[in-house]
Length: 447
Image 1 (cartoon, one colour):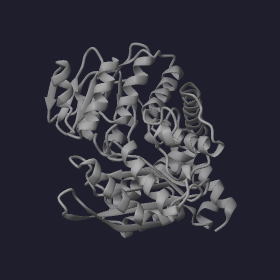
Image 2 (tube, one colour):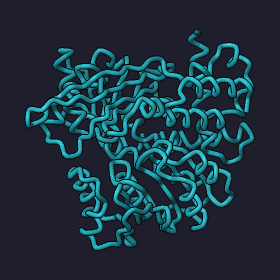
Image 3 (cartoon, rainbow, N blue to C red):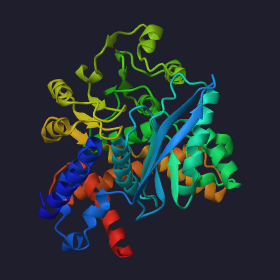
Image 4 (cartoon, rainbow, N blue to C red):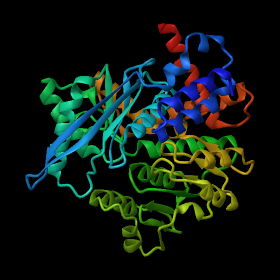
């Protein structure tokens, strides 16, 4: 690896030894962009250090009262990573596993994912170690209001634009935006995205991440002269990303045959491919029980407790749940089953060792989440555009714009890989394409 990159990585490991998710993300990225680091300006301006560490990070307490009158205190975070090409932009995650390391990793990944969309947005992330599961609407509202009381000073349409992530859906965004309006005394529509359709939200926003992932897959298949029709797909999770993948895959003639949760996975040989099943995914999410076995009970399909869906023989694997959900043992299963395509939906779903095993295998073609998982933020940016012109595009118009953006992301990733002699390595290609764009913007703007 480039000597300058090695030094930056060593400094980062020393400084953030207690933040494994963040370090894993940066280390993998440095290895991917290594072929593009021959420009002497990068070291002269210490560009890598300024790209792998955030501009700033806020940490704050979030006190709230439950329905029984008992006080609780959670920890909130917002990392503003890079604004070289536009205002900070990234999700908020409410989950017990949220830590400074997770937030930094998400902000880092978001920065380069956002750059690939071609839209003027930087990277950020945030959230809290609050679990909305099992909480009443009033408890969630009180928590969101307290969270925004601490956050509102640091966000805005031209500063930092939060959106949803795990544990933060349309309900939470509504509560957050309502409190932001009260605090700011103005209706600043673009201050948050993922809003409801009645107050500035964009059509197909909730399903956009899944739609975009399938569009990226379709371009991969098109490049291979391999039709998407008839393909079987294994996915993890059952949230918005998975819901969108199921819907768009069905529309394009493919079939999703697995879903998963903390309790295990289901196998549906006829496919998650009817409106009844799509609606039930939303119902499962709304119940907040985090049990995919509910689907098995409802539709009479096999359920495999405590197991992952990667043992199923399919044409395509799309992890859609969370980071590091796929390890070396899972990668071995995938390769043994002769899976042809691995496309990441969620951020950093594979461990470093598992991803390396998949990328280096000649048996499978791989795509990283910075490219294939960009659909959600792309439509978030389109939501901001619609808010600014006070006009809402039709679902078909938004869908076509999303498809065009995903095709452009694919083309940029493939072109960068080819330019640097990496063949058809789309994961390295998308990292290099995003790096080149952000680095040129940072150089142009000076120290």
